[in-house]
Amino acid sequence: MKQWNKIITLGALAACSLLGACQKEEGNTPAGTEGTGRRTVLVYMNARNSLYGNVFQDSVELAQGARKMNAQDRLLLYVCKDSLSYLYRISAGGTRLLLQCSAEQNASDPKQLEMLLKWTKEQFPSQSYGLVLWSHSDGWLPSTNVARVNSRGFGVDVGADGNPWSDRTPDGNLGVQMNITDLAQAVSASGIRPKFIFFDSCLMLGVEAAYDLRNVTDWVIGSPAQIPSVGAEYSDMVQQALFSEPLDPKAFTEGYVKQASTYPEYGDMGVVLGAVQTDRLENLAAITRTMVEKYAGSNETDLTGVLAYDRYQWQYFYRPEYYDFKQVMLRLITDTADRQTWLQALEACVQYPAATPYVNYWSNSAQDRLTLTPGEFSAISAFVPQQRYTSNATNCLYGDLNQAFAATEWAQASGWSENAFLKNLISEEENTPETEEN
Image: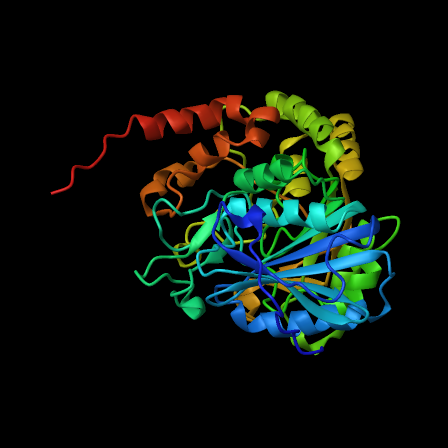
C-alpha cells in the first residue's frame, strides 16, 4: 500500500458540524468532480477496540484488491482506530486521505454513520452503493450502553482515551455500541439505499437483525456465528464481491468460505455465511406467523439437537444460542406440506448458505466445534423463547432475553410476540418483585 498522502490544506466540512470537526483534503482531484460512478462502497471500520491490530492488514488487502478496479467504481475506507478517525479513497492509482475527524467522533454513534453516508452520496454519486460494517457485534441484541457492561450490539468504540485492547473506556466500562434499529435509521436518514450491507463481524445474520434492515438495503450478508478476527480476505473480495456487476451475493458467501479454507490466517476456526434478500422477508414473516400460530402453543419447544451457533453460558455473557432458523422451524412444524410451504419461503429469502465443514467458536478445542452438513443448515439464526432466559434474567447482560425479543419487529411480524408461552414468561418476569438495595 502506498503511504497515506499528507493533508495539504485544511477546511471545515459543514456536514460534520453535528458531531464535531472534520477536516478535508484539498488538492489533487477534488471529491465530487468525477461525475456519477457505477458503484461506491464504504468500508466502515469501527476499530477503536480489540480488533485494532487487524486494521492494517485489511487495509493492505483493500489496496491490493483495488489495483484492477473499474475506473467507474469508488472504494472508500473509514477507519476509527485511535485518537482520530480517517476517511480514505482507495483506487488503482493509490490511496488518498479525504477527511480527518476529531477525537470527539465515535464510530458507534449512528449519527457518525449517517453523516459519512450522506457525504459519500454528495461527493461520490453513483448508480449503486454498498456498505461494509467491520467490528465486534452481537446481532439483534440491544446494546449495553445504558448498563455499560460486558457485551455489545454492533461495534465497540472505547473513545480516544480508552483502552482498545480490553474494549474498555477510561472508566473501565465497555465502549459505546450501536443498536441495529439505530443503525437502520442512520442508513435511512442518509438518503442512500445500499445494494448490500455486508457484516464482517460476528453473529449478524439473524432473522431479527435482517428484518430490522429490510427497508434500507436490498441484501444483508453476514454470519450467524462467530467470525475470526482476521476477517475477510479483501484482496480477492474487492472485485469478486464488493464491485460485482450485477451484484453477486454468492460471491460474498462462497468467496469468504473459500478464503477460510485456503488461507492459513484462518487456522481451524472456519466460517459460515448466508445472504438475505430483504424484499422477501415480509413474506417469510407472514408464513412464519401462520406456522407459529399453528404449532407453537403454551409449552416450551424442545430444541435438543438443534444447531446452535453460540452457547448459553455465563462465560459467554448468557447470550442466547442463536439457533439455526431452518432447524428450529422443522422441529416445530410437524406436517409435511406445511414444512414444504415454509421451506419455500425461507429458501426464496435466505440464499447461498456456505460454510467450511466445521466452525469453531471461542476456541479451537473440540467442545467448541460445530459440524455443518450441507443442506441441513440455513446460515441464518433465530431466537426461540425459553424459560431459562427469564429465570436467569438477573445474570444476563441484557436482562430478560424473552422481553427483549418480544419487542423486536420480527417477533411482532412473525407472531411470536402473541405466543402464549412467551406472553406467560414476560408476565412472570413483570410480576417478580424487585429486590430492594441496602
